[in-house]
Image (cartoon, rainbow, N blue to C red; front, side, top):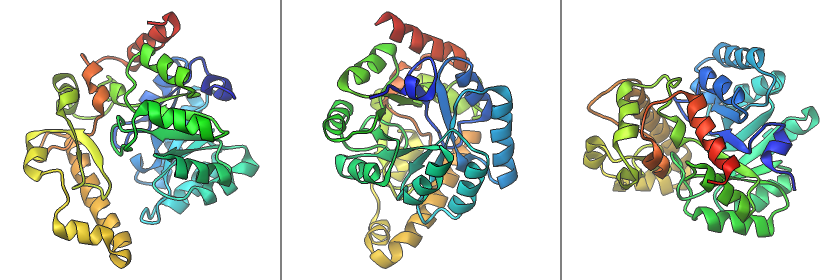
Length: 318
């Protein structure tokens, strides 16, 4: 089975993960010029014109493959028009999250666009494989943002033993040795996000970047209060005050079949607005997404320096 670098024609088996509000064209271009691939969330662009401009800018700077993350949940009103744009502009691959990828896979296949699907367990991995996914992104318990519940090794080895498509491990990778380890387990490569949050190119607040340096793994918690799904965040004073467990009303809304769709939409919009405000400027209500790999973020650096350290360690076996 092909490794990710062979599959995409890149130097190293790495995707810089799509990060809500953080990923931008500067980061993608820096990643592509450093021998890895990268993706950004379609939702990082408010209008279709902005999304098209971003794709055009990246394509104009590099011929290397990059992807776009698409939220395929029915509660995302931009899903259909964004998919249409990604198909028209022939992005190299689409990463699907939070819903069935069937429509995306069926539309991409004739165009030669690869589809990588976020999965958190074997059952869903088998489902997307049967639908024709080109690879699965195995989101484990050490991922930042929306994390899974299964440890990195258990998830990769279980999927490897039971699936016939490549597995891209997502969560907890910060060093070349850790990247080498997941490949030894059977992964084709890795999707890596947290260590890039504090890069020079990220257009987030200086306070967010400083928090990435100041906080460590012990400060990472999961909250059910923000997006309708468990979200991994830095345990700031505001998060401590807010609490991490859904209250009774939120629980009822999330578990009632009739109300669930609308509740998730409302919770997601409310939660993402809070995350957006915190990412772009320091406020009392500070919610910063990050994963346990924050432990390895020691300074604010250019993307190329972070990637060069990671890939250098990977090559040397350190």
